[in-house]
Structure formats: C-alpha cells, structure tokens
Length: 278
View 1 (cartoon, rainbow, N blue to C red):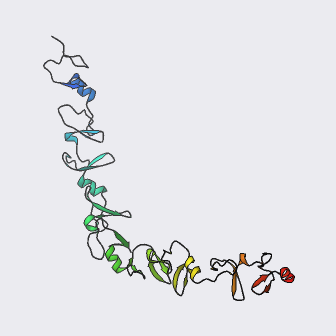
View 2: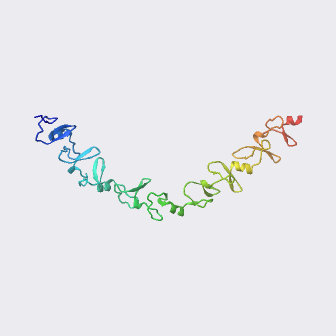
View 3: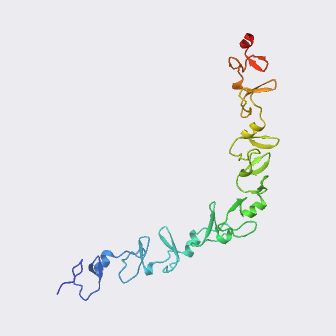
C-alpha cells in the first residue's frame, strides 16, 4: 500500500487524526508544535481542539479571553483595549472613559457623544442653554461658557442689521456705530459691496470712491478727471478752480508750477517767463 505519513516527523498517519496545511498532512503533535499560536494570557500553545480567539494579531484561548480587571469572559461581549490589555466596557468606562461635561457621568464606549473644544457630552446632554432642546448635528453658537442653538442665540444676543433687520450671526461691519451684514453694506450709488474696497461717505451715506468722485468731486481744470482728495492725494486750488498736482502746469511750456510763482492771463495759468513774453 502507498504510505501516508506526517510531512514533518514521517510517522504514519493511518488511523490517526491529521491536519492538511498547503496540501501537506501533519499529525496533531507536529502541527501544534509548528503552527499553533501562543496564548497572550497563559503563554501556552492554542491546540487544535480549542477555539483560537484573535484580535490585532494577538491570540487567546477561549477561557483566557478575559477582562484584565474584573476577569469576566469577553466572549460575545463588547470590549476595549488599553496598553494592550483587554477591558470590558464597564471597566474601561470607569477608568478611562470620557466624562460628560454636563452630567459628569462616564460616556460609555460605543455610545454617541458630542465634542467641542476638548469637552465631551452625552448626546442627550448637549442641549441649548436657553430652550434645553438637544442640539444634535444642528449648528450652534457658544456664548459665555454656554451653547445656544442658532434661533435662541439670535433672539437673545445677536445684533440686528440696520439694512435688512435680520440677526448678524457671523462677522459684520460697523459703520457710524451701527451694525451691518457684509452683504448688506453697499455703495449708495452703484450697490456694490463695500467691505472689500475703499469707500467714503457723503451726507451720512456710504459711497465707493468711483461713485463719490463721479457724483460729488470737483473736476480737474486740465484733465477734467475727478479730484477725490482721498488717501493723501494732493491738489491745487485757485480762484475756485482745482487741479491735480501733476496737472498744474504752465499752459505754454508745460513746466510744473507746484511750489512756484505763476501768472494768469484770462483763464490760463503761466509761469513767470511765459507770462512776461506774452
């Protein structure tokens, strides 16, 4: 008859239990010595006749898979680990679980919790300070160590926009000591938003520079462009007429007259030399 031996010790396997591994037969003794995992608790091999429980590449006998604190069996029970130690849910919660900021009780692993700025709450404890309704996944606003749902915060604390009369819950603009939404703070002339650009005011109303210059600024006698006089821009004023500094030049030779004497002939401005020649 053809022989049927253990792949490792070569002992005959006829009439004996054996295990196939990669199509090679092994007797029980050889298989356990070569391939059995070692129990993390008792350090003994986990034989073929017992269950091998594994977690993150670690192995235990079924009877060794226990909580390191209370020693209860963890078979078919939820558990956690801390520093490679097995812990049942109760033991883990009592020693390492987060505590609810509101009720001060432990938040058990696996239960939903809310977190904000390093603090934790039971889902049912994370409520609006005013209406006491659970906030859940809704937006909220912290104020003076309390949390408020958006509607309650708007009613209690939010400033009201002068333009639309609605609450300002995010950043806004203060103009003439009055609050505005950024989207509501518009140029009186062209209705463009002003927070992203330079602006000025006239008769208490805000204007972008273009509208202010076009509507109210005097025009340069030379180039006819508006003279805003804003941001330190310089101009010359004479005889109820105005010029940009760079436009205040002699009518004939175009030399700059800024800081120099000049003569007038009719509506023209002339340097002294050109004025004498005329």
